[in-house]
Length: 401
Image (cartoon, rainbow, N blue to C red; front, side, top):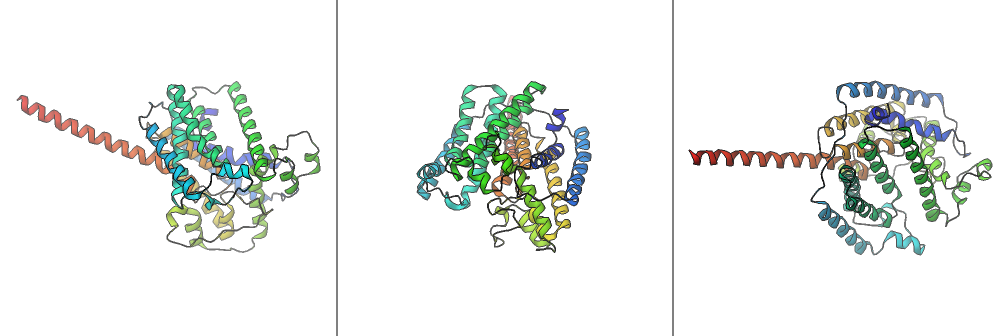
C-alpha cells in the first residue's frame, strides 16, 4: 500500500496537502484564522480528483524502480558547479555563510550570484545532487556518497535551507523508491529522520533570525502561552510555521479578497509559466496577497490564483497543475537512467507546492527539464551510435563480398 502511494504523483498530492491540516490542528499560534467550509470543500474536491486519477495511473502506467551505473561525468560536472560558484563569490564579493557569521547577512534573492545564471546554477546543482544519490543507492560505492555530500555542500555555504531540504527530501524519496518493501521499522526510522531535520531546520532558523534565541520567532509570530510554557523544543515551531502558515495565509486571503484583483492574462503569465520563460516578455511587479503576518509570506500554490480570479482561478490552477504533473510522470517514466531522479524532483515539486507556486518558481521548475533533456540527448547519441555501427557492418560485409 505504501509503495502504491509512493509511486503515484496523484496520491503524493493527497498525502502532501493533507499534512498542513494536521500541523494546523496543533493550534500553537494565535495568528491563524479559522478554516472555512469552502476551503475544506475545495481541498476535498482536489483529493477526489487525484484519487480517481491515481487509481487510473496505477493500473494503466505503473512506475517501476531501476538501478543505474556510475556516471563518468560526475567529477567534471561537480568541478563545473564549483567553478561557477567560485566565480559568483568573486562577482558578489561575499560568501553567505561568512556574512552570516559576521552578522551582515543579506536575505534578498539577488544578494548573491550572477543575475539569471544563478537560478540555472542552483537548479542544476539540485538536480545533480539527487542524480548522484541515485547512483550511490544503485551500486553502494562509498565514494559516490562523498560526492553526494560534496554536491550538497554549496547550499550549506550559501545558507539555502530550502535547497538543502529539497535535496534531502529528494534523496529520501530515491531511497524509498529503491526498497522492494517498506517495513514498519523503516517507516519509524524515516519519521525519526524527518523529526531530526525539522529540529535542525529550526536550529538554523534561530541562528539566522533570532541570534540563537529559540523563543524569538515564536513570540514574534503569536505563539500561544501554552506552547511557550510547554516542554516542546521551540525549534519545532519553525516547522509548524512553515508547514501550516501557507494554509493560514490562503484562508486569510480568501477572507479578504471580495472581488477579483486580476484577470486571466495575469493568471497565465504569472502562475502558469515559469518566471524564466516570461522574464523578458513582461515586467514582473512584486506580487502581494493578504498575509497574516509580514514575514510569513507564502500561501500555497493557490494563493495568487485566488487573488486574480477568486474560485475560478484556484480551480484552474489545480487542474493545470495536476495535468502537468501527470503528463510529466508519463513522459519521464520511459527513461531508464533519469526516471528515478525525475520522479523525486516531480514529487518535491508537488510537496513544496504547499508553500509556493513551484511552476512559476524557476529554481524548482527548471529541475524538471534536466531529466527530460538528458534522456533525450542520451537517446539521440545512442541512436547515432547504432546507425554508425549498422553502416560499418554493411560496409564491412560489402568488402568481404
